[in-house]
Amino acid sequence: MDAQRALLDELMGSARNLTEEERRGHKEISWDDKEVCGFYMVKFCPHDLLVNTRSDLGPCPKIHDPKLKESFESSLRHYFYVPRFEAELAHFCEKLVMDLDRRVRRGRERLAQEVEVPPPPPIPAEKSEQLSVLEEKIKNLLESVEALGEAGKVDEAEALMRKVDLLNIEKTALTLQPQNEKVLMLAREKKMALCETCGSFFIANDALERTQSHVTGKQHIGYGLVRDFLFEYKEANEKARVEEKEIEVKHRTGSTDRDKNRYSDRSSRDQNRGSRDSGRTSDRRAHNNSYRNGGGGDRRGDRYRDRSRSHSPRHGGRRRSSRSPY
View (cartoon, rainbow, N blue to C red):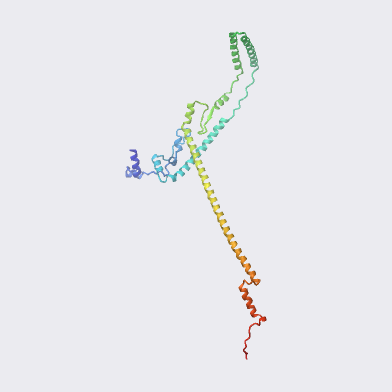
C-alpha cells in the first residue's frame, strides 16, 4: 500500500486528494527547495546525531523526509548537488569539531594540573619517643623469635611474632599523618579520564560494562561520525588537488617538449637555409673573381673585350666611307 501511495504521489503529486481550497494553501515540496535539509539528503544531519545528549543541537529547522531523499538519490541532478551539499555539511561539521576540540583542551588542562601536595608536618617529640620505644621492642622480640626458632620452640616463636605484628600496626598508626581534604578530592579526580572523541569524562580503569556503555553512547557515536566524515572529506579533496596538480604538471611538460621540438625543427631549417645561402654566396664570389681576372669562362667578359677592341684606335676604329662628302 505504501509503495502504491508513493508511486501515485510521484505521478500525480501529494496534493492529488486535496480540495480546491486546500490546494490554494498547499505548496508542493521538492528536494532542491531551500526548506529541505541538504545535510539529510547527502549524508546525515548533525541535529539528529546528538539528540538527548549534553551536546544536543535542538531540532533541525529544515525538512527531513525519506521520500524526498529517495527522490534526490534517483534524480539526474543528484551528482551535481552532492558536492554542494557535502561542502555545506563539512563547513557545519568543522564548526562543531572546533568547539569540541576547545572543550577537550580545557578538560585535558584540568586533568594535567599538578597538585602540589604539602610536605607532611614534623612528628611531635612525644610521638617520636613512642616510635623509638616501639622500634626497640620490635627489635628485641625479633631476636627472641630467632632464638626460639633455633631451639625448636615453634609455638613460642609464633606467639612472639603475633606481638611483633601488633607493634608494627601501632607503629604505622603513629607514622600516618592526617590528609588534607582538598588533596584527597583532587586525587579522586585524577582517576578520571577524558574521551578525545566526544570530550566526555569517565572513570579510568572502570568496569568493562560501563566503558562499553560510553563507547556505544549516542554522543560518542555522533561525534565519531562527524569526525570521520570531516576527515574523509578533507582527504578526498586533498587527493583531488594532488591529481589536478599532476595533470597540470604533465600538461606543462608536454607543452614544453612540443616547444622544444618546434624550436629544434626551426633551428634545423635555419641551418639548412644558411648552408644553401652560403653555397650561393661562394658561387657568386667565384663568378665575380672570374669576371675581374678575365677568365675565359665568362661569356659576358668576352663580349665586352671584343667590343672594346673594335673601338680601339689601334685597330683602326670604324672604317670610313669611300664616298666623298662633296
